[in-house]
Length: 232
Image (cartoon, rainbow, N blue to C red; front, side):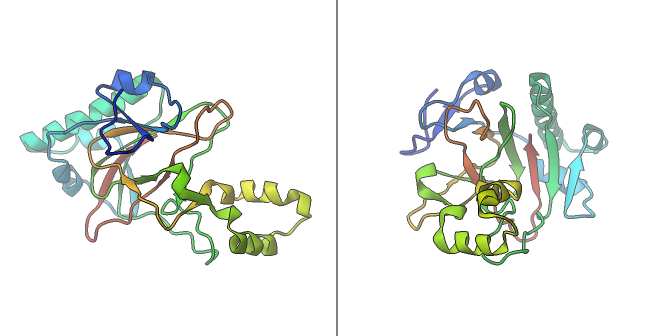
């Protein structure tokens, strides 16, 4: 496993799916990338799919029903192969065509939607896999460049104001509403864009995890452009 992301010791790079799933996170590495240069017209697939809501889960049957050019066929073959690889591994991949995610506007002082830097949590040992085939790609952030929002004094005070319960239950309240999973980038933060076509494995917060969970966020979508994203 080597590192080709300039100067970053958070990311490991592998050259196959088997390496991706077999390589463990270690030390400061909490994101592993199967770096690929995909040949295919993924934009054609996006243009052929129908999106009536903000998000649509695209099934294998939806993909197979498309009439595509040779380049579009090549792109579909890659997506189907990725879905099969992840399914055979035991994951449950979801292919999403999306215009935008729902925004969290309940509280003006803290956001807990996917556009906010956050980590994933699971009660069991698991990893997050994702690949952006078309459109804007997600960002990750080095852990040392991120501050938990619940530790920022003014945010913490406002959360205490809306907490309806005894002080000893405050930490449980933060977890129940996922406030503790969200982070604020520090002023000097340098996000790393995950790019298109690469299949990533990100560390999740779970009881057996030996590294820090990977801080990441969904990107702001490009105007007039849908995203095609595989995630599980």
